[in-house]
Image (cartoon, rainbow, N blue to C red):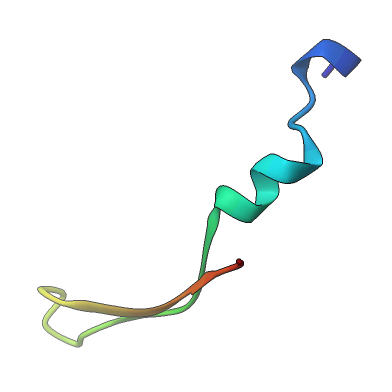
Length: 38
């Protein structure tokens, strides 16, 4: 990655972070936590 490819710091606030992903035993559903920053 070069400096010109870097993401501006302000762009990180537009991202959604996905954590705590879980798949049902049947494999037909997922649950997760989505965190957005303001």
